[in-house]
Length: 201
Image 1 (cartoon, rainbow, N blue to C red):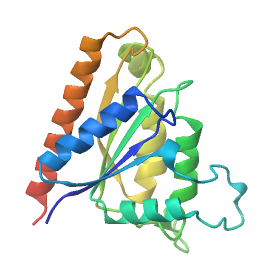
Image 2 (cartoon, helix red, strand yellow; image 1 turned 90 degrees about the vertical axis):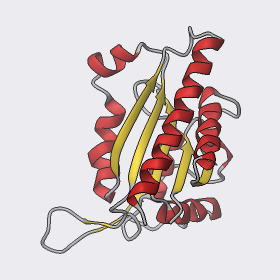
Image 3 (cartoon, rainbow, N blue to C red; image 1 turned 90 degrees about the horizontal axis):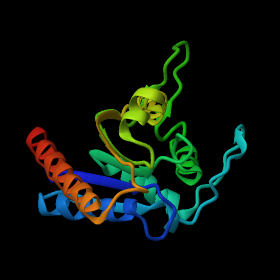
Image 4 (tube, rainbow, N blue to C red; image 1 turned 120 degrees about the vertical axis):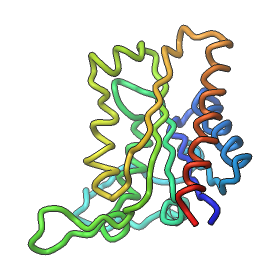
């Protein structure tokens, strides 16, 4: 079976390092034999706010319906995002709020504390860019994005966060450093494609 990868570039800027990293990951994964779907959050047409929370159903825009279908079919999810104020950009957070819905990503079970995980069996990689030093993000801030995504978000849906990459500081980086990060993204893509191919018939 051909490994299927879904990449979400969570930086809404039309031209960014995250764009370049997501494209390089996609290119390298395809060279490694994977089937790749890439979505840029800034190019998706959707309302990121839940106007009534989860009390009322908010119809999904066509782009979100397509994204849900891509996630349902994918074996592996890759989220590429910048660190803004210690966490994910608001539009990417809104994308998760709108798409990881009850009945699609999880299902409550009567009499049980934890829901049924409807996306179980999938894995994920997180690729974060940041202006702070990597050590500051990991040791001083305590890796807040992973602490939010690993169990409360992805884990609740059954997606296992297996790989993390932290790249920074970006604002003081030169072309050599950025090229090194692109090379690392490509290597990660080939590694993921190979691992997925080995574990799936």
